Amino acid sequence: MLAHTLPLPRRNPRAFLLIAAVLWFMLYKTLEPLSHWLVDALPVERGSHLYDSLQFFVSVRPIHIE
Image: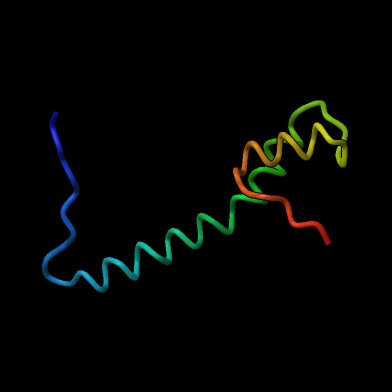
């Protein structure tokens, strides 16, 4: 089995981890709006169980119920 990993930058690993964490957080924050946009493109009634299920499937995180 070939085990290949990406090496962390050796010069400044803290800066790399900070940039990676910021990018991950930005991507995480766009999951919900992106899932709404993708599911809205389908012919499904907004607010239905199918809509909520598809949105959950696309975003892979629970929907906030307020």
